[in-house]
Length: 334
Image (cartoon, rainbow, N blue to C red; front, side, top):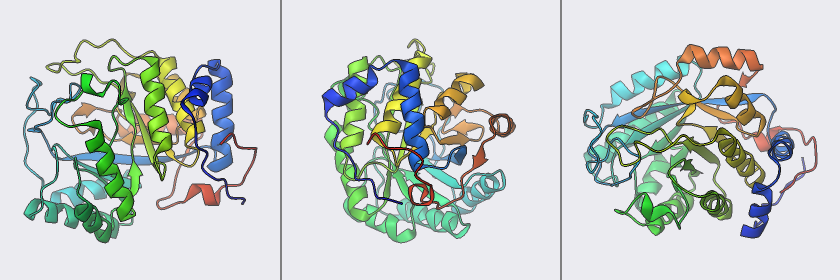
């Protein structure tokens, strides 16, 4: 298969793509997807909250922030055996990637971090991909996670640089980019996306996509979250995101980052099967399964299984480098 170099996209180019008629945009994104990935193949992932509540960040969407008034029971860092039991259950239900999330501004060196390293080793020993999201990360911590076998590290941009201070004030956009750089230096795949529906403009969504596509290397995984308004947070009364804007964001992400896994994560519970099917047609090829995504509800295992069957989708094997394994079927836009 021929090698496709990563295209450098200008903000003006992305504006032009984003503003195309939606069905034309979805058609192009579907073609790009088929050029790099196996059609109808979807990766199943599970996300577990390994430390819940008590986070000192003031993210306005988050139920786990100490600055917000959401009713979330605080739970300390879980034990290794309990996490591995959950990972085993996820694997038995079809997941090939197990993600571990801790509500914290930054992971501290010491017993807690060493425990996380043991969790990573245990998940990898099961033959699953292992992902962590632990807040800000130093270069040395990233190196240790890599040595433990970590497959990917999640650190979302959340939104555009321009809109960021309307959502988070306790750390800067540059703080996020610094952690992303440390992940890249360690040779860990980056999982990085954002949340739409937080009062941002269309220009903000375009700016966020431009930043994501400009990362070097581009993210291996791009979650496109729809805000789940939580009582007790400043965004509890945010209006629902227009479904077509969500689809449009997914399609543009697929065109800009053709090799990435584009993931449907938070917000799926409020979406119809038809909307999810259109998102998959637009290039999404991963879903998070299980009852919860950290603290927000998620479709049940059986619902996802029924949707997969109805759409003729098949699970993606673990550790599959799909852009090497797929057959080139059409010319790329990237």
